[in-house]
Image (cartoon, rainbow, N blue to C red; front, side, top):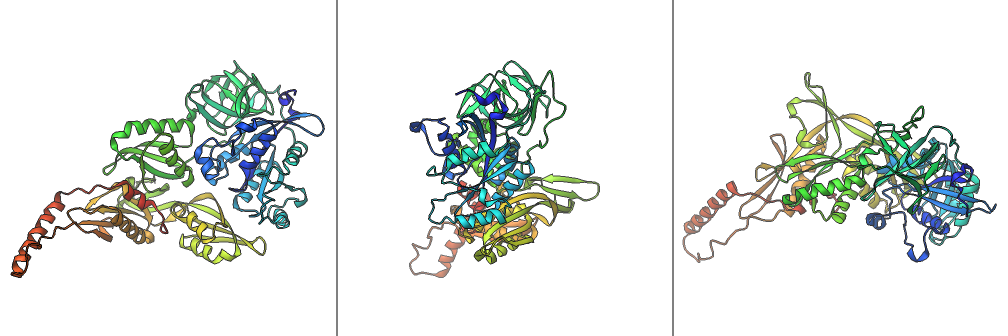
Length: 606
């Protein structure tokens, strides 16, 4: 088979976009098997998902790329470059960079579930980049599959031609040959000239402990080859390319890549944070005139502090976090300390799923036992007088009440698609979360699309779980951050035995402070082991106590030896015991178990 990679007319660059769990990874598996990139005895499901957590949850976290060789019905050999994308909203910037590396997209719709929230948002993203879109109806072998209904949704909701939709069962491999042929026939070949100055888009990277950072590129113009000096346009860093090649599950060195190709370069780069997704790579000697559009710094939106359970493990924990950062450039952290938990790190995440993934990777890949504090968002706080404005994501940095003039919090535009039967309960949930309805559209007689503006902080704790339980898993949710709006912000402190536990402090909306304080106090009461003395657990706004629970003391029965006799004798013994308990409480220190911190983070319904 001749190498079609050098001829742009024989290259097709495409991605697969879909809502979570519509069969994207399974279809990628079938395409890879058709290209004979892996022997059947070595094949495993979700072959592009490298992490255990991706396999278990059935989601894609890190985007991958693979070049699939294909001989079309016209007898010509083609290189089909699949740029696999994450499906979750937390990784939408990675999705947008992967989409901008392609000329076409397979839009996957589940025949049983139909068009859902992220199907729409990913379609709009693909349309913004002028991609050729091929609708594919998957899971046609399912008993609940409704092919005519799904075709109608594709026409009404997506505005695509339903007759052009391909019918496949990725699980059984039905219709996959038709998908490969449609990619060749319907997706245009890449434009661009190998003779022009080098212009390439970084859409991902990963870290190899032996070779350093491996940069994933899509070349729009020019040629890149070993020994050439290249420049990253966002920071001006220059490197010498050691090797270049394509992805065929393993890295296959080809010596050079030319316009239209998708591949990798290795250039002795030591840390992933030096390489920025969305950046433009050009030649150091003959640079291009302008960078490719769309690059932006990835900014974290959810913040939490992480501490090792045993403070003696701090150095080992620090090393683990540094290694994890090598593989995940979007993880941001800085040193932090707490009177209750010792030394740790304040970390920024792209969203709640990203936070959960980091937690599981620390525990599994590095064997770390860690405690996460309650997640928070970044608030804008205006100070009185000439104090100006500060950004606060950590409750310990919140200025005193007397210094604060006002605050603003980040808002999102939430899009929920739900069966009409669950509409009332979902509207109640959104209103409870301070949502303001901006749109309600009946997509057909059974499904409704709701649009709400709501604070990001309200989505952090239990919104997604409750949405899924209310709708029995049928409602889908997608969001985008829209900006900041004024809010009434207060700092909720938790006092244990009269002492403030800084790791449990939270920034909350004023009207929610009482409910939140009561919930935290109840959870701690159930988790803190009883001591020899009474332990008060209090929620406070400044000096005002707004909630209280008590852990009762363990008591010795001092009246056991008093059978009959005078009541004053019994009272004397009880008063003596009471005095001892009081003295003990003055000097007693309460150790908070890890389960207490985890209990505070759980949702109401658990």
